[in-house]
Image (cartoon, rainbow, N blue to C red):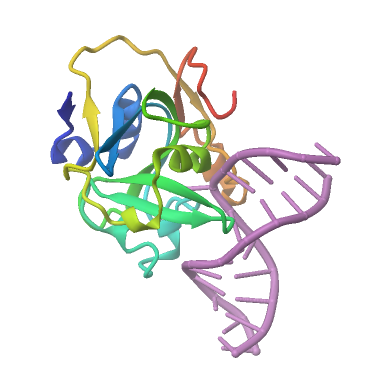
Length: 183
DNA sequence: TGCACGATGAAC
DNA sequence: TTCATCGTGCAC
């Protein structure tokens, strides 16, 4: 497995979202390595994207999103679940990719379909907000072997308030995967 | 200082 | 369709 380099994240957000499918999210805690294969993700295109948190501007909460690429933006939603995002493009673009579902690969307990469950199963919480994904305990890696993946595009989930942005096809998932949050 | 509301998930 | 549950952003 090779850890993805900074340059992987410093690219167009839609490209990063699609390329993250099939990659491996790795989180090491207490010597235990949890691995999940990313099968579903959504792109959030910066302050002008009304569905993106960065549309609120630079606030304490969105600070990480406005920062450099390759860092984790983790936040609490509905007071009970965490959501894991990967910051993309250069500092200031405030763009990110939300990881919505992974396929269990190693040391994963419980379900992993849906952003909240994904974080729960992989032990991800607010303490990892701002964490560098080029670190040794929390990162995304490539298996080295590239199996061809067919990608399905859909509107993003739960962003109906975002006007025309809600209709854009910015949700991507691996066709045929049995670990998608919803069809 | 108060308050409305989620990039959700599970039950009913 | 409803509810659990709380940090964030913005109004006052």
